[in-house]
Amino acid sequence: MLAALIASASLHNCSTERDPVTLPGAHPDSWMDAESPDFHGRFVSLDGTAACEHCHGIEASGGSSGVSCADCHGAGTDACVECHGGLDNMTGAPPYGLDGETSDTSLAVGAHTVHLEASSLGAPAACGACHIVPTFVFSPNHLDPGRPSGQPLDYIAEITWSGIADGGGAAWSRSARTCSGTYCHGNFTGGNAANKPVWAGANQAGCGSCHDVGGDPAKLTGRHDKHVREEGFDCIECHASVVSRTMQIVDLGLHADGVKTVSILKGGTFLSGSCSGLNNTSCHGAESWYED
Image (cartoon, rainbow, N blue to C red; front, side, top):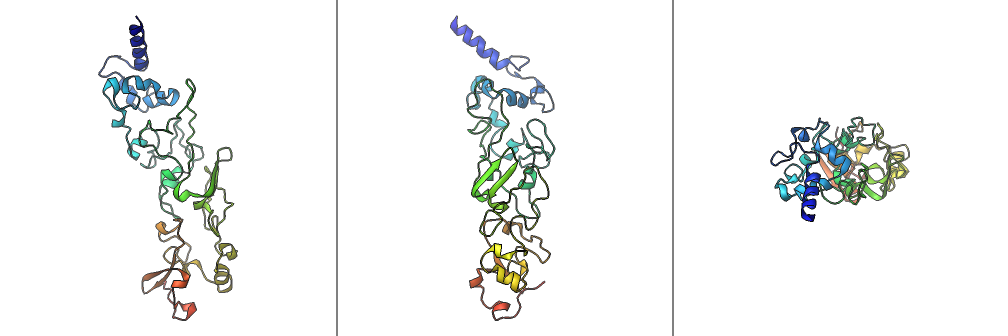
């Protein structure tokens, strides 16, 4: 009798969203239709994945159903866009949140696309700079691990800084919607460490928001004050491989990359190194090297 009750309960949990309840074809066609109210992603977002485990196994590797969720939800960004992202690009970022948000003024969408695509200021950021990226949909730290039984998902994507994003003391304020202390927004030697860009804001990353561009060159430390204020140098004089005369970034991979690139253009070639290693520059005894 007990065995029968257990079997009955398992069947009920496994077939709650299924019509018909027999295998194969245990789920209706609408279970795979992202536009349908019966879409399995909506079911998981409300109730989690516990019910899935009855047929697909604890790690969704097949279980009694023999169907592995990893067939669609394995590693890589193609798997990410099965549940979120993919409208602007295939990086796995929004726009569109798990509740269907599409506006970049919403918290779920915000500046994801701006960060994950190359901009006029820098190369794309990796998802792992701000989040733990799961290797699989049921990996730890994904889909609200440890959520109390019966409690709804909270839709909060936890921020875990790493790599280039963390300037030391990086912090995220959900209430203020701001990032602070991140390297890429000014937390570096000579940078504007107090900069706090708003996640769902716009036009916040112009030249001068993260570091000085000539108004107060002493902030940049070293010999910047002498070269910029006293000698009237533009950024291009010493950073020609990074920035143009009109202050446009010419090599996205060399900007906001954690390295201060010193480079002078001579004969169509960038001579790079430290200031002390670039001898015989025009200001230190040789002909002018910079060429438009």
